[in-house]
Length: 199
Image (tube, rainbow, N blue to C red):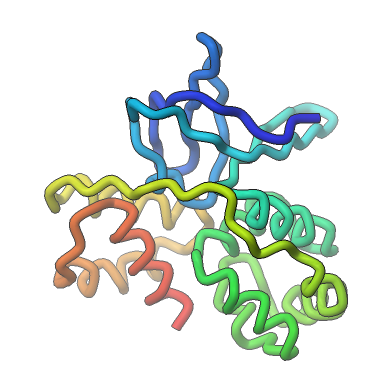
């Protein structure tokens, strides 16, 4: 129904952003909310997917059309729901994901939360022939927030990892490594954390 919304991000949380479009605030569940800036002077375009179920309606947001297309492919795989698809997409190395599917690399896929061997095999089986059809052109680039490093940014990043479905023990394991990194934003911590969790 919707292709994208364009407006101003008014709230960023570990699992969603709120996008103000002409006075209406849309809650958009995203893979990495910290890619978006609050109160940005320039409007931001976020591609959306609307999921309607018996008792709930949700909007999912994506930084570009390629990410949205990849999400749509993933949720059509048996055993992958929207939450699992977002957790997979949170690792911004989408080319790595596409290569893993193309090369039958199930071990790479099992590093994501909620993806076991059976589901990883199903992803490869269902998407191997379809994955090359994806348009990898990125239509939108959103700059990460670059404020000073502080514990609230690390805490936000760790909360976002848990919101994506990683277990608390896994998040605690990498927290020490993240504290040693010279990262200056929540988005940076989150990206580094996802890299560590999928090594």
